[in-house]
Image 1 (tube, helix red, strand yellow):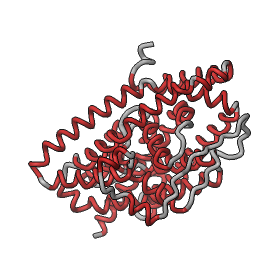
Image 2: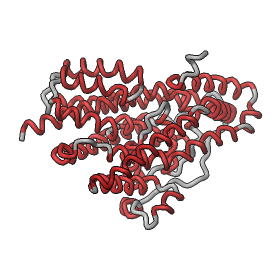
Image 3: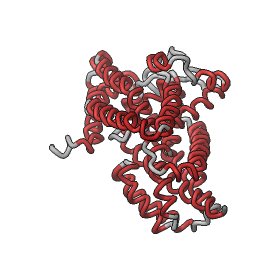
Image 4: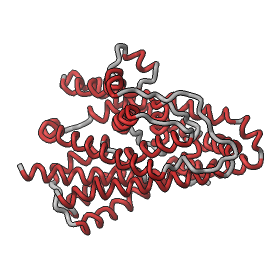
Length: 400
């Protein structure tokens, strides 16, 4: 019993809540529908923490970069590569998700209907609105992307003023730790929230919800494998000249750790060792790009957000315009920089992403019950993306 209640085993408690929610949904459907307020309260706790967690995580991710000389030499190149790989992974994931359409084709007892309005900006209006006239109002309105951009510039400015900026960085690091601890407290009520939301989903939609979730999970795994081979393995083999067998062997070593810990940070020592010893990456470059990638390069997150957006929009019969798709990818890229390093942190970002698009959050409860299965592959793709980027950067420096 003590092991079940350990912080690292939150997913076990969530799975128990998920199972109890299924039983409750079938056994007492009327009660399950009326008790949805418990799940709504859980989602509100998560939404309450989105802005503070995003701001402090983005600031600390940039401000804590140690070697600024190396940052000037290869930092811009590395970050541009991360962006290109993220966009490519997003496009591939959207393609896979739109072929499979996991939110369609399932028979429900009550067809889900969404009466709200999805934000459908043009490309011009999106980029015009991300610069807020009032940063306090942007925070109050939940304008996440605007806050991320402001925070990025703020972090760079704090680094630029040298010694005078250190107290600000120290304060933000402390604030980041406090917010993450606060969020971890709220995540402890996830089993109860998931139970309520799952009971509601079963009571309202019937057994069809399980078929939709199974298709969604399968779509996420397929999108991740497609992105792995096209965005990570092919450039590493063709450009960095790493033999395919050696790359896959290294992938296996890293995947054993990522799938058991579901933590990029916990895998970092293994990632650095395998990159240097097994793949022959330069130590100086690896010690810079891999920790940086662990913070801001989330290719698994690209697959996660694109599949989630497609699944939820199809589930509610919502159509995305081209402008929304462009803003979706850009928003996903910025939000992934704020990935909280806590169990189930992806659930928080998923809720933030859906909120940004104007989509309902109800499905985050059922998804949370299976999230461990998703987190395993998303974390693996995050880390493998860092490894591939490290090899490409090292080769580009070697060619100069």
